[in-house]
Length: 206
Image (cartoon, rainbow, N blue to C red):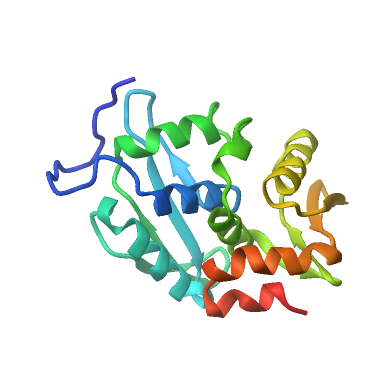
């Protein structure tokens, strides 16, 4: 499907494809807090990333990864609802994001793509953990509350098939969270530490 640019300036120096790094980070981040938007089917999609001020360096690092598709640098603003500052940036509406939008937002609501096993790499897993991981006892929780039970079960299968990680799910309020078992934490650290920022290493160690 061809899509026209939406609030996007033509830039002959902008890449026409995503790099391997960008693809991997995008796939993992979209399982977490990354957000994509496409105003209409005929428009190109864009990526938007927002974190609390405490994670400003992380946003700046992500901006560096996707800066080729951005028109303005990251910004800081005060959120009156939560009474605190947040840091965010948005890419321009670009054709390179359309396929990811169609996979993760088939009906404008985020889902886990059926082919997530083909998309999720060790680097992507690292960014998923950075975004939505937290230590739990001697293992690690992935906050998959917004996904269905079937989607969570699919992710558990992918964690085993792609990375040989043993995990299960636990009911949590209105959803389910994936729990990576304690005996798989050594394997997990080996996989993701090369891609994890120093300020997030604490999530991998008790």
